[in-house]
Image 1 (cartoon, rainbow, N blue to C red):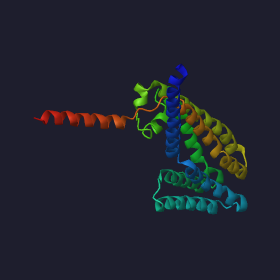
Image 2: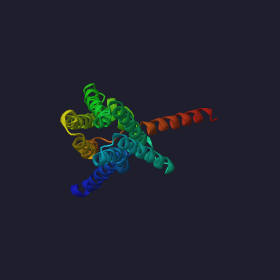
Image 3: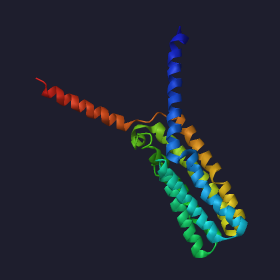
Image 4: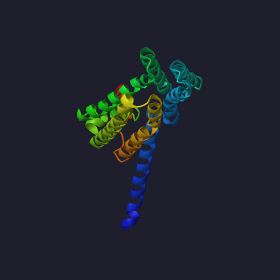
Length: 243
């Protein structure tokens, strides 16, 4: 008798867990750009190091990388897709081109991106230590919970803290590999190592974020709450006006 009574509850819990995982996957896909976003991140650097490996021509390599970044943005616009990831790629490549052209050192093409990675790693760790995990600030609007997790959903705040620490430590580990190679490694070898380290650390961080959030309490939809409050207020006003 008890097992029959408990079965619907177990099924309901399983359904909620499945829904939470689905929502989390969709939110991470939207926030970090999915497969296409990863491709747009990798292609310019890959093209740069490929051309430089072949002919050691810094100008041709830089122009090709910048050109393909622009093409990716145009493709996004033509397909009416989200362009924030492609635009960020263009700006990153443009800064790299400027640095490399100014110094004449091909490795400097990658320097702005490396500094950004280091800064982002520190931001993840520092904001988490301050009680406002950066990953929560990024994903809160995507989950329609905004900052409700800070005061109303402690389990979710803990999950965001774990995820932010994971991102910070993974990016710091990546920097610990790249910066020594930047100073002492061969330009071509350094470029290929950097390209190889584009996706795996990112996928690991996204996977850990998914694990932490899938086990966390569901987000509080503050937008739905505001809509419900507005509807209730309208109903109260209608009742007052009624004879």
